[in-house]
Length: 410
Length: 122
Image: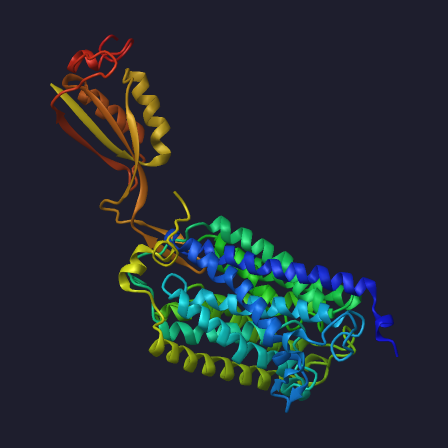
């Protein structure tokens, strides 16, 4: 059989566009985060995300793709067949996406591998040593992201065989990033003056710009995960938009009840809705998406409160927004999934299949323990070997000057 | 005798104060942006969840150099136009000034402070 003939140009075009949309999310995240730090650390924070585009692009071509999507070694990790993207070309790989070039699939997946470690940077902004951060990101991508991506999406992965559903990365992207952020924040400790002096965001407009571009990019993230230009992709785009809208509105109400309707709160809520719908977007109806988004907002809102009360400087709330939002999304998939939307998926609890909820919970728990545990040990080791933080004086001056010798504004 | 008035005001009251000063014939002034707090101690801003306190609030400082006998009238104009009655309205300091020299003409003191249509010619 000539597999090249099975290529569908519409599907391929959509996946290429979705690749560009997901790529844009990492600079968008840079602005989302950059606006929330103090003005002496804006460049540093933007760079933490931006440099990961370079770093993980190379890692993915060399080993990342094959560790995640190479032929499975016991469901745990991919073999080295696709190292250097060798043998990954214009013909489709029917295990992953039968109607687009294998290389298109690999490149689309690259953008997911990039944004995930970029998400974690919110945990340690304004104090991390740049050199240590670079090493951490490479290790994290290789030892945590690639295996978990294999478990969930690799043809014979552990969690895939278990029957866990994750349409676009609720567990692979958001739970891993969120709980790794928590572990990193615990080890690196709070910023100087945390809890004593106000740390005012340098530019909430940057954050709103970033959130808007994230929202748009998410259509590629979730819609593209259909890996075809079809009704399922449309469903994913609609559920994505609906969940973001619901979570943004609910967050506004929560913020209003506490004081005034914070704009930073509204855009945070929208992002939390996007996180929560990610694993479910190709399995649930738009109405279910509305509920998933609406419930995600209070979960993350009170998770932020909880970590503030515990005096934990997980600075930009990666755990509260991505970890807890992703956890809810994974569980909600086990509640609301229906084969009416996606015959290749499964039914959830509300469609007569309580077992799916158990599978989702088990997969979630496993990924939380793995991501938190391995990150904790890795960061402890880096702390011993290289030091995680800049000096106190460098921190006071700000990382823009002390780490990069540059100023954002003059 | 020449005096300097330093009035620290709410930003949003600057236009009202400028208008009141123009009405009584205070023609020259300069303004600097300052940050700080007084007895009020700061305000609460809305964050992602709930509120947080900031203690360095933006204010404007209006600087006016004038003759002694115009001080009371000017202070009263500033006070009335800048007041809201809520904490954070600001404060006025008055200092003696040793000498004033106008750069263009070399005029000193009283002459250096005179303008056409100013408070003393009304």
